[in-house]
Image (cartoon, rainbow, N blue to C red; front, side, top):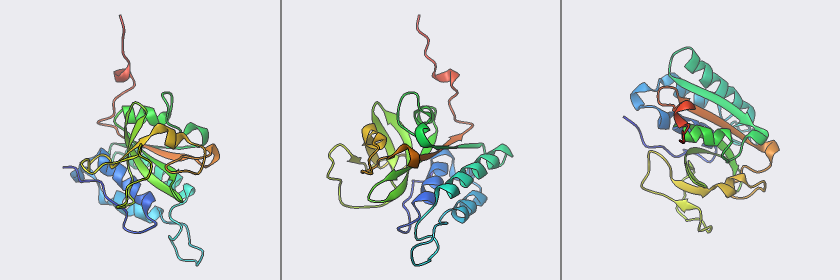
Length: 206
């Protein structure tokens, strides 16, 4: 049984929430070991606020890299058919030859760091042409002023936003932008049992 994707509980836990949403999206509830839930929360929220309070600046890129490697090793030892890969820099973009597109087209998911009014993690779950299906864990009631960013309420297991790829690929610090290549990062995740292989995606023309 699948659970609906969920929203963050505070102003700061978008990182671990998006990673857990990725696991939730890829696996049945009965498959997910409690160790993953515990360690995702343990390894994230490592940044201290200006007043010294732990977690008040969310999750660092170093913690996300470490968590991605831990999840991949967790899969390799056979505890869950999970694979994870950390990407950074110019390899993080939405485009036909990119790793994110490849993952989304093969039943994978991607946690990406984007800019909203500050740095923020969201989950990407699908593509339709130049539109990207995403789950933003920050719950808000007010609609966006940008008419081409759609808020979706009837897909709780997959996405709550449809975002044009041009927003994500922007190098500016603008809404849902991956921003400059130097700041970009993503975690690609697969359920190895449901992943479509590269050979399966090849189309043959006679």
